Amino acid sequence: MKIFSYVPEIILFVIMLVVIYNDFKYRLISTFALIAIFCLTFVNMIFKYDFLTFLLNGVLNILFLFFLFLTIKLYFKLRKEDDIINKQIGAGDLYYFVCLIFAFTPVSFMFYLTFTFIISLIWFLISRLTKTANRDLVPLAGIAALLFVFYQSIGFLSEYNLFSDYYYIELFT
View 1: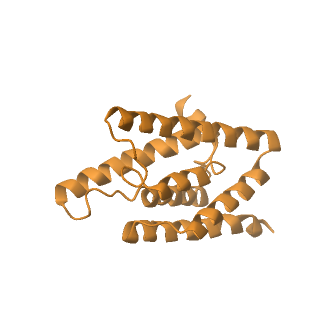
View 2: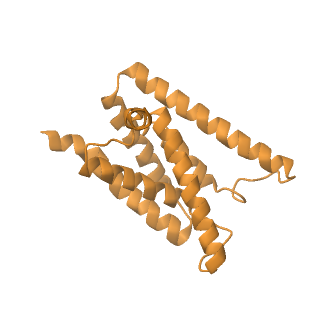
């Protein structure tokens, strides 16, 4: 009976692989994939936590995202670049991160985003130095999905749950 508890996670794993492929190859993210990611992470989280914790995690994560993207918008506004959506950051990338608000607890979400941005920066620098890819476009959602798949794989293969704050609290205390 426990195998059925993994079904949403396995479906999410497959959808993330599709996001990775589409974002790296076409720099596009399917609306269907975004809706499926949101629904699956929503269902997965609501069964793992009580309603108050579930709601608090979602609110804190969306507030963190709002603060992060407001800071980015302010930065580009100070540089006199008003329209950053689809020029500096893709709308699909923003939607992707919003769809993940229920996938993580707040501390793990901050670590996830930090690692995603560091890997994206490394991708950008390598592609700029090697001139192998379109150097102005970084597959941010694809890199984030790749990290998500890595997190899931760690969870499947070990007792570590990188989606929960407990791992990070234990790691740093």
